[in-house]
Image 1 (cartoon, rainbow over the protein chains, first blue to last red):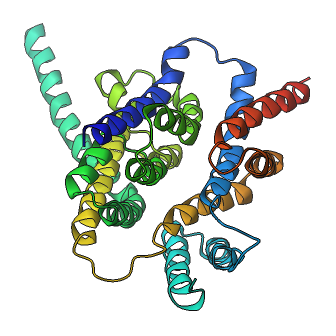
Image 2 (image 1 turned 180 degrees about the vertical axis):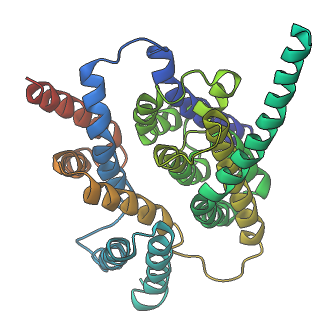
Length: 108
Length: 245
């Protein structure tokens, strides 16, 4: 219980800290270094790629079901998003299909 | 008419005018934040259900949405809490997952200039969605600073409401929720796809995927994140330094 509360507070403090960093480092009127500006443009894409792999770290491609439910659901999410450009519909469609897949088709 | 009465009249007129634009600003902020409202209510509920699924009451959903207030991080936090993570690993994980917020901050430096007392809350509440909204078009005839504030505030209210509702119905839910955690993968994939479609340079995205996959193979599922992040930052710094010459 106490451990959990401290965990939440740590995560809150680090999150807030990260959000305040730029405003502390570059107070009103101070120029932002070129490299920081360039990094700020490319880092979000790379981090999102990293987080995707993080979500899939538990998937085994060498044993049944070989990551098939994840692959199918991800194709549904991406296709849905490219088609509709709607975050909510894509997430709902992907999550519901994934739940159906692992609860019925790909029972382990 | 003496000078003071003229001044008084001007202040009175200004006050009426300010009240009018103030009301309009709130209204415009509500309208602008409707897409985030639907998203946050549903995603917040998914988070709440997931949290209840691991045996945490709605108070936890409320506390987390109030203090952490970072969508994707709160999904990760469910795993960290239920897995009894150490303080250090929780801090590092937060650092990695939310590092992108530094980037959001950098691009909001100018916008948030001169926001006074509202500035700390504006910075605290800068989530992906709020960032996206405030980077969009700001409606005309509104007080910009108040508009930023209300959009930020309303977004957090939606998120808290969604997560508490989710946690409340989650503990009462009798359907099989196996696989509901895929919502997090789906969320990241949507953001990834959106970036892929809007950003011309695909090298950073591919580097992120490639480096992390490589580190996963080398370091294993328990320890790959930190080396991945460090390598990604180093490689991007090198590439950007060379490219800027």
